[in-house]
Structures are given as structure tokens and as C-alpha cells.
Image (tube, rainbow, N blue to C red; front, side):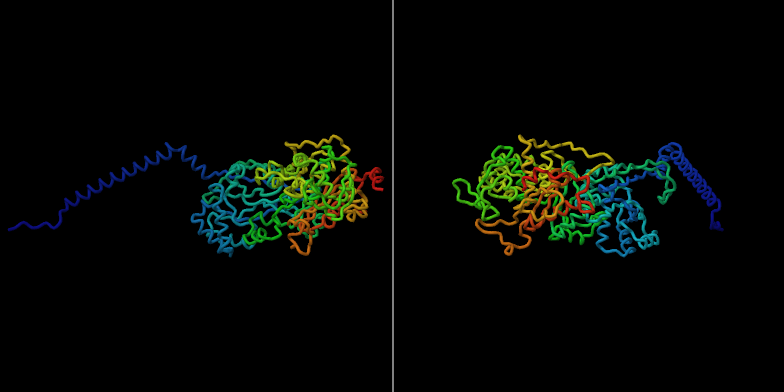
Length: 631
């Protein structure tokens, strides 16, 4: 009989189970051992490292940007302050797919594709990792509410309250105070990254840029404890920032408004100085613009309108406008002739209406084609006689003429704190040889004597040259800052005073300029009618397009923007000058008829009281010598 077949071996199965249990137990014990070893390594051996990292994740150091210094006019009127504003900030490293988050922001706030492009550009320009970058400023209450409702869709995005620069006077001081704007990539490379951490704006133009270091201040810090969602739980330590310094300007808002009103909406520039200190009392470049547009980012369309405007509102005519000075330079040329000894106050020149160089047929015309007959220095200034100054320039020669004009600041920067200023041009033989590869011609010297030709200057430089005549050669660089946190600005590169062989020459030229305003034949006598004080002035005309030899200027045949510029400079009271005014009216044609009345209005606004009489602090007796000579 065969053996029965065993369907199941219970003993073998039991043995297999026991082996598996033992193996599993060993494996579990090994894994537990590994886990214990790992925990020991992390919690005991690397305790210091991980406790430090944990503390770092819990405690953060945040920068506290300083509040920017305020700017006031000389009377304490605020012209640049900081006002609270809510902005939308993004921390790119905490936003995950930050581009998608930006799409959500645009969707939630119902913004335009142009805004989306701008947001991405701002995020990319973020200065440091894990630092919030403002992408949208001046949020409305509705926008803040929408962000709050959709906060779960916007990781790394938060509403932040901050101070934003504001210019309460609008366009009045746009060209002098300037404006701040967002820090760009080029500026980030040169700035102190530590001191500017948390700061997103910097001075771009004007006083805001020149005194950036003083206005910015010093950054502060605070150590804060945060939770897992990076919400601040408490402040552990704080170092307060040092706010920027306040600046008081020499500008006067009332005089500024008076100068703007005197221009009457015409394109031009007005600058008023105190010749005794160099303080700029008014600085107007028209048309102007609203600097508040640039603070939080101007739109492409708005900027294009300003940039492409034919009237160039962004162009600072006071500092960058280059114009032939015309006859306004004649008082300085007269000083040069007297001091060089080539003429005296009694030297007379016959004027038939033109001037000719020896052995040359070309006629250099006087503006008065019929001529003034025999003219001396006093009459030449009063009548703005071109023939006299052609002859004087010829006697001086280009070398001496250029040297003297440089002493008056022509062809160089004259200001103390206006970085945008153009140096202008005072031509020399060497300059022409280097730039034109030509020799200097005698006729070019003649036209320099009446402020034409290659010579170019700014309205500020003309004001300074006139201030030197008013102050009898004492150099005070024009400056806008009257004090910085109570301290006066220091001129580290002073110009030497102009010392004449005979100081009385200043008085002689001063009297000739008074005759321009008060003499019976003065070219600007109409502008001085009824003045309770004496004015010393000089008109000028700057050609925009050349006129052929023998032709007369005919305004009806010239386009409006090709007509001559009108210039006028003056100071008052003539015996004890307290204000110097330089005016340029683009395409105004007549210095005496258009620019001189502007000068008179500015002087009246500064010197006269409500009763129409000279203010006590400016009053001085009229020179009896001047009165006698006028009679």
C-alpha cells in the first residue's frame, strides 16, 4: 500500500514563520538603532549648529529706512516733505511662482498689462534677497480691501505703510529743488547697499540730488521674532535710524511766484541773487512740470508728453540754457577795457552807424543804423552802442578779453550747489584751433565785444557777472542752500575777487548802467518810470538765426521760434545793491521792451513794501553824485 501524500507541512511552515519574525525583529531593531543614532547626531553632536539655524529662522534683522530730511524756503514754507502712503510690496523669495502671483495682483486690482510689465521690472530690480520691493504706490481703500480678501492667493505680497516724498508747491520749485525717483540698476551699483537697505528712492535732480547724502540720513535696524508664516511676533532689539538733515533754501516762495507772474506764461528764465551773499532768491524756468509725477513712477504716456513737448518743460533754462549774452555782457567788457588801460571814461569813439577794421571793407553794424555820433563810455553803456564796443574789443584783443571774461565767470560753472549747471563757452584762440581747426580772425573778436559769436552763457552766469559789477568784484558763488541743519554751506573752491587798478572804475560802469534805466536816452528808461529806487541795468538781444550782411531784422519774415531772445540784467538799489536779476525770454525780441519790465516787477516784489515804498531794510539815500551827473 502506498504512503499517503501530505498536503501541508506544518512544521516547515512554523519554522519559516519563526525565521521571518526573527529577521523582522532584527530589522526593526536595526532601524530603531539608526534612528536613535541619527537623533543623537542631530540633537547632541550638532546641537549648536541646528539651534543657531532655528534661531535664525525665528529671529530676523530688518532694516529701518530713515525719514528723508525736509526742505523749506527761506521763510519756513515747506517745499518738500514726506507724507504717509500705503504701498503694495512683494518679497520674491517668499512668493513661489512670483510671476503668477503678479498675474493675480493685476487680476484682483483690475490693472492694465502695462502695469504688469512695470511690476515685473520693479521686482527684478530688487536690491537684496528676501527684501520686500514696492510694486504699487498710493493704494486706495478699495485696493487695500481687495488685497486683504485675496491674501491667501498672494503669498509674499503685503500692504505696507511708508513715507513718500511730496512737493506741496508743485511746479514752483521743480527746477531748483528737483525730485526723487526709484533707484535704478546703475545707481544700485554705486550706492552703499547697507545704508540704502530698505530705501527705494533717491534724489534725481536739483537740491534733492546734490544734497542726497545729507537728506538721506542713516539706516536703522531691529531684530524681530517671527512665526512660521513670517509674521512678526515681537521686537527683540531696535537701533533707531538717524533721520536726514533738514535744508532751508535761500529761495522765497513769494518772489518765485512774482517772477513766474512777470514772465506771463512765456518761455524763459528768471534768476534773482543777493550780490552780498550769493544766495539765490528766485529761480524760474518756464514752462515747468509737477515733480510729484516722478516720485512713485511716472507713466510712459505722461513722460512721453513731457519729453516730446516742443516747449521742453523738463529743460532747466536757468542752468542749462546756453544763449549768446548779447549786450548784457557790455558792462563786464567795459570794466576790462578800463582796467587794461585801453580806454578811459572820457575816451570817445565816433559812431556813423557801423564799425570797420583797418584795411577791411566789411561793416559791423550798430543796432542804431543812423549812429550816435561821438560816444564816451557812459553814453556807450546807456545807448548800448555796438560801435564803441567793437572798437573796445579790437583794442583789447581776444586774449585779454577772454581772460577778463573768465574772471567774471563766463565759460565756467559758477554755482556752489547746482550740479546740473552748464559751463557755457568763452572762446579763445586755442579753443578754436582745437575744435574748428582754424585760426582766430579779427572780426570774431569784435562780435565777442557785443556778446555774440561763439560766446555762450546761462542766465545764472549772466546774473553772477552782473552781481560782480554790483559788489565791485567780490565773488560769492550762487547757492540755493541757506543752511543745512542750521549750518551754512561752505565754498571749498572759492573764486578770487576781481581787483582793479582803479576801484573807481566800478562806479563809472555802475553809473552808465543807471543811465540805461534813468537817463533821458536810456534804452530801458520806460521800465524804470515811477521807481522809488534807482536801478542799474543792461539789455541784450541774442540772435537765434543769422542775418545776412546789409539786411535788417524783419520779425514778420521770421518764424516765432526763430526770433531773437530778449535778455536783461540789473541790480538795485544802484547805490547799495540788494538784489540782482537776470531775465531771458525766448524769442522775446526786445530786451528793453520785454525782459526789462520783468526785471522791474521782480525787483518791486523784493524791495517794496505793501505801501509801494522801499522797505526800511533796503532804504538808502540816492547818490547826490549820480543825481548831479544825470542832470
